[in-house]
Image 1 (cartoon, helix red, strand yellow):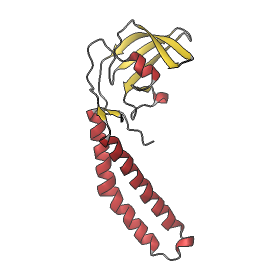
Image 2 (cartoon, helix red, strand yellow; image 1 turned 90 degrees about the vertical axis):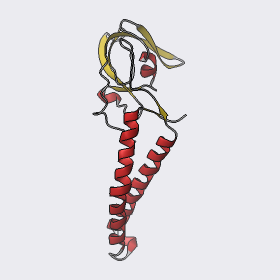
Image 3 (cartoon, one colour; image 1 turned 135 degrees about the horizontal axis):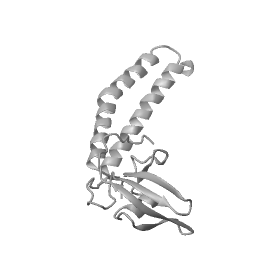
Image 4 (cartoon, helix red, strand yellow; image 1 turned 90 degrees about the horizontal axis):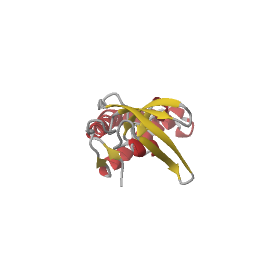
Length: 167
């Protein structure tokens, strides 16, 4: 099974592909040609840098195309009062006596340092489909789990500001 993506994710990936193929690729190819004409390739740093940039772009194109080809589309909609995609959830961790707010996203939009948690992560899997007040066990692996309590669910499902990870 491939990545789980929303329609918004697919649109953003398609736009990035268009930009990389139609805008970046021709410029990078021209840069390689121009720097190749500068002389001895063994000592031509500009040529090697241009070639490296072109190869990184081609690699990213292949990665995005594979991602789209193998993707499973998931809904951005969620039921009222139930944790779903793009919802912001306030949780309380009794073990640490801390409250944290996280946004449930697809894995390509996740960014734990900025509070965006993937639906594929242990916390995301544990929260999706749950309701306010539920005590949830988050299984990290076979030897470690912890409990959280869902305090609040914000049903706003806007994902337009979320960036797609470039890995």
